[in-house]
Image 1 (tube, helix red, strand yellow):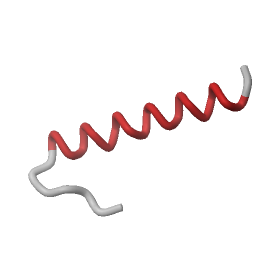
Image 2 (image 1 turned 30 degrees about the vertical axis):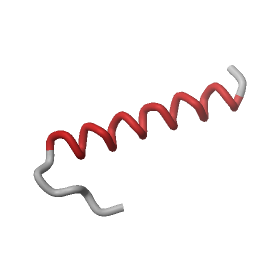
Image 3 (image 1 turned 120 degrees about the horizontal axis):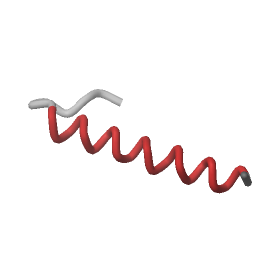
Image 4 (image 1 turned 60 degrees about the vertical axis):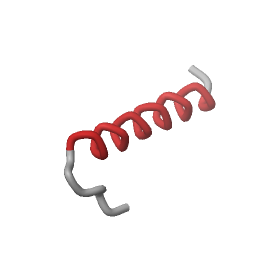
Length: 31
């Protein structure tokens, strides 16, 4: 599996987790 694909998957997972944090928490998380 090429590194670009792995990086893309990590980015998508990270974006989705951040989005879920914003959706489920009353205050935005600190980054």
